[in-house]
Amino acid sequence: MDWFFTDTVGQTQLITGEDAQHISKALRMSVGEVITLCDKNKVQHLCRIERINSDGVLVRAVSEEECTHEPDIEVTLFAALTKGDKMESVIQKTVELGIHRIVPVLTSRCISRPDAKAAVKKHQRYQKIAEQAAMQSQRGIIPDVAEFTELKAAAKMLGGYDKAILFYEGGGIPLREAIDKNDRKIAVFTGPEGGYEEAEVGLLSAAGAVTATLGPRILRAETAPLAALSAIMFHTGNLE
Image (tube, rainbow, N blue to C red; front, side, top):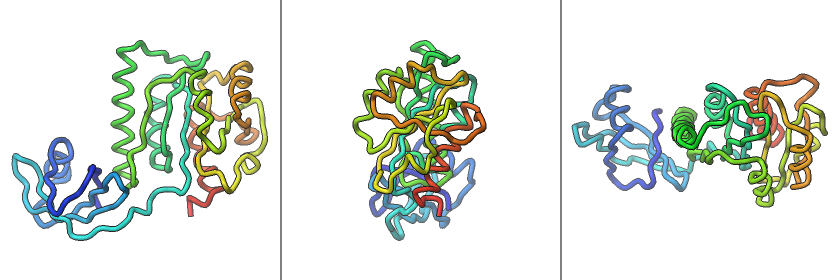
């Protein structure tokens, strides 16, 4: 079932813009076929196409039900900015796995350090990738991708989480010991290609982060977020 997002859904709904183009041109759908619209309250609406023309795609709601595709925990990924297009892959895959929010973080060893103009363009692209991945994986929300954030600023955000976990190649406790069954909002930190400096580990530890490990092997910067999120979802029963 093709999946799209909208703020609200009435008895009838006119879909315009890129979504309408995607339905009519890319998917080549026709009158009578059905799609799903998911609203901001995480309610999914089964809708039948009634008209396709230059104004857009007119659909009529047929049924609705609560979207049950969201995990019962909210994980925010504070991922150190990686070089090239690796960050795009991290965003796409973590959205598929159930991430709630992504914060690209600038650390001292980040190779990629875009200027203000480039950062705006990257942020816009990152959010679009998150939206497309949420549609593909039939999420109940579009995870937010924050603007680029310095590590010191990120550390100050940790008060709003039940648990903050720093995955560090220098070692730490096993993940199963870091997660408590009552944790509902979890912050996860993963490093850049060169890893974290000891002072940065100290900064996050002082802010309340628990240092944990993903095993004896050293994972690439783009692999660690996927391994961490998959393990968290497994340990909390969200891959069942």
